[in-house]
Image 1 (spheres, helix red, strand yellow):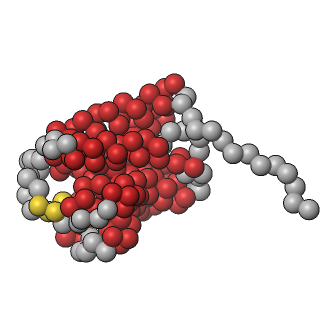
Image 2 (image 1 turned 180 degrees about the vertical axis):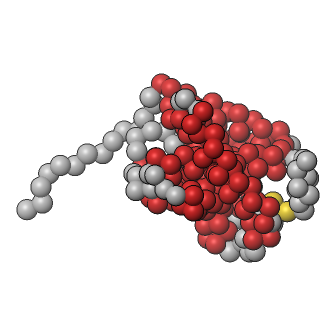
Image 3 (image 1 turned 120 degrees about the vertical axis):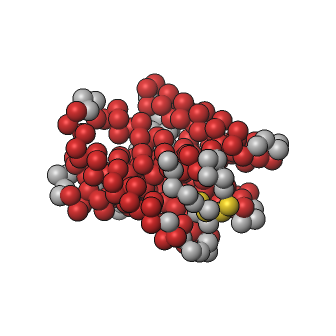
Length: 221
């Protein structure tokens, strides 16, 4: 049974709302992706736990700090901390049985990206920020955890490579805002955005969709 909560990132939500379910899926998925990234760098158990925590909850923490939204969600709900650390440590036990770790990592990361983008938008929207800030808050929430994970694991963050990543977050944020502006129910809008965003990200990976690259090689005189 899901833990009884009255707040998700300090907002009133039904215990079984789509947004809460998406949030729990997102922090679990991102914690597991963080653990896999730590495993590729041969980190010890403490390192795995730290990377799992930062990946899962770092984006929301940065968003709340930028928006001045206090108290930060996970500080009021320690069960989220237990969940992400537990998911990270569990990954160390089951990873050896996962034969296609790269595909699993990309799937988990995609789930977290889409879910956090929607959640970040909703938080800023409920706080009454203008549209551009809502979109930026959604993208900040979606991509920051992955950036922190990759930096701590000494890798070039996925968002700075040629893959469609931040652009997928942008599309999801705009879609979510459009649906809410049209009066679509929050649960329905969340489900539609999650499904379409995940499909877009996985198609981009599968078909190799990429953004144009700027390459400047001229030497400075």
